[in-house]
Length: 249
Length: 254
Ligand code: SF4
Ligand code: SF4
Ligand code: FES
Ligand code: FES
Image (cartoon, rainbow over all chains, first blue to last red; front, side, top):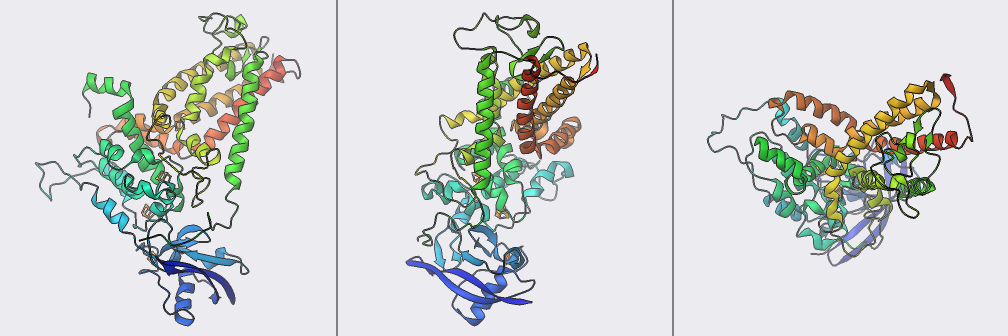
């Protein structure tokens, strides 16, 4: 079964652009990326789109479909009505290169700002021993495919360009949490999260968790636990007293 | 380099405004009811069956009905329009206001920050929880401690009420404290204190077990937040209706 679907696709570059209307064939079982490819093949050979795996694993095809941040390759056409006009736009938060392709280097900058894994000094590579229960929490965060949909959706930077300097975004606060929870990491990540990565900007409104294609509980399992660690350190005298009395770590 | 020029505040086509609107209406309605009951200063104690509404527990000042003050009356009568709950409400309200779930709910619904995902917020500046007053959200921990004590008081009241027999009111009080307990235990701070703050679960098997249990409840934190909030109001309403003799308690024993 196929039908002629109505699409509006953003076209342009950093000097300007707008939504262009197209009517394209849609076949059963297709995803939005298939339609974009058909557009390239039939009507707009110079339409720019970034993609690689078409399996929801490379994180390249992030964009916004009907205003919702999604992977183009994982958005089935069957979730839309046949009569519906489907709007496809690039991610809003990052500078535009062309059409659906944005420059996501903000994320690479932020990634570099997270100090890398720091094992104990006396432990050589190959000598690392860990219990499964101790690494389980960080393993959830390793499912991340770096699609940056969470970074794109987070209102802290999406609606306030000026916060990009101070705020690393959910993906990289989660990276800090991953290392903080790692049984062999010795670096002190708690103050870093608050002071260097802007954890305090997050108001736990959970849009990052809502859009994550890997369904990582970013807010519940990474951001809130980090906020609690900051509260331990900075705002809880009972924990402070307990640590003084029993010298726990 | 500039962002793509898209003028629309959002291109979402679904009814994204419905959840924040519902949340706002729900919170407003409950606040109005709670404020009315707080300042009514009456119908909080059913002497015959020893039902005490959770909104007035513990009743610590001298204007309380003496039998309702299970922990004595250490405080003098409150001046003016103040009623007994004003002593405990700052803690209960503080607990809910600084709760991670309610924060999400009212930041979205009342402050539109953001109103929904990928819908631009109307504010020109945003500093989140980095400075006063919102930095005080970090005090949630204390409110959790305080609310846990108040929960124990509510459990005590509920157990005492069974001394007079068994009625529908007893069951309502029981469901109420169960929901409150589940909500309090499912708190993110509780999850952290129970075990989340540890780096090596393998060295603390008991706390690891506690953490896994609290984590299960924590998955339902939003649902428990609403269920317990609504049920506290219903419990209070039932006690108020029985206390004012508008209805009579359905008794099973005595
Ligand atoms: S929960 Fe925090 S990090 Fe995630 S989208 Fe909301 S504000 Fe951003
Ligand atoms: S956390 Fe989820 S949404 Fe964010 S970059 Fe990773 S996979 Fe994408
Ligand atoms: S193309 Fe790889 S995630 Fe969509
Ligand atoms: S997080 Fe909701 S009560 Fe603590």
